[in-house]
Image (cartoon, rainbow, N blue to C red; front, side, top):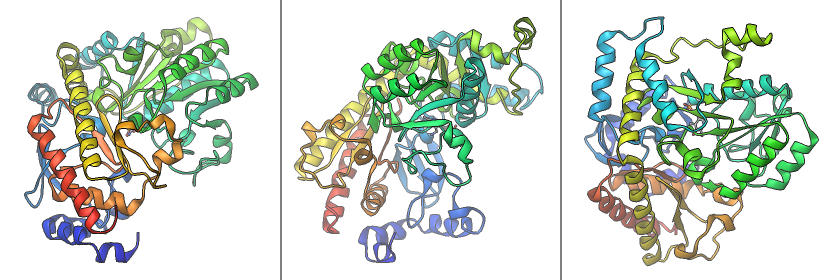
Length: 457
Ligand code: PMP
């Protein structure tokens, strides 16, 4: 981004004015971390806010500013920050010890909660993150089928592991991203999202172990997937003895208590989870058909005479994550938290579109379930938000955002007390309430006015 963008903007100046302690910490962080950051999605010019504490749908920065939070722990916090039952479960586990180097009842309750909710979960294997879960799922698929290739889709995210880095935000031609071996990328077939014909053609060529995708579309519906496409993938993968893997790291326990697979009625062979799974703590899982997860089973190895997949992981199913996860999943199973978050997000999308319409901006708010996205219309097409349909746009256009406009939108929203993600958009929790909705809508209106006054709209 240009220096003039940072120095000539009243929004940037006001942001600096409001967040001097964050600026000070960001200055120190630049001497410890590349870009001063520990996660790429937290990148924000001129610097991001430093948070001191959080509660429910809110968080407070080190300068004492309060925000309505739509980052939601990168989607992990369907229940909001510090749900008392999750905290209590964590405290119980913490008091008992943080690592037993042995099996424990917390992990069993956690797995049973997953199995009770998720249709495909005949067996469960916990990992420490979503990235590890997708890595293990693809290895299981290759070992189970004896085939080498995997199919994934442009813009879909499956963590930062080598097999799926191309085509998320760059390398849309499937070439390897820097540091990844060409031989690895060669066996990962990158297709356009939603292209059933291309999938059929790739499967017909043979040697495809698995198709992996985000079942409601890239970045929680930023590039949505038609449910008919999912059904077609189910049929095609069964026909070609290829495994269907749903990456439910975001959609799991959010779209519905049983994830996207329960909501959409398509059962994959394997699914990956993280985020909500562990109640806001680190943790992931691969779940799926018993005959596939048997590749991790010592006895099955002997019975079937095949090589076991080795799988270690110091913090797999650590007791504190397990206790938090089991508590969170119990709340999700027994209350209406998914419906509540979904209803709030639908109301928010509607209200944001009303603001867009009355302010005469050619943008649109859209999304599914408890997510929202703001389409910033890089190509400056004529559009009215009420008629906007993301299926009319290709994935490159939906994903493209003018970086300076999005940065200013995020800074303006922060100035007005709301933290949104860089999609731009966010995830909603069950802790968001009527007051948060009104505050967000008012902040959005003020932010659009601020962007207009800087000639960005
Ligand atoms: N898959 C999807 C769909 C994700 O959104 C993410 C994280 N944003 C991951 C995988 C990776 O999960 P983690 O950050 O826990 O490694």
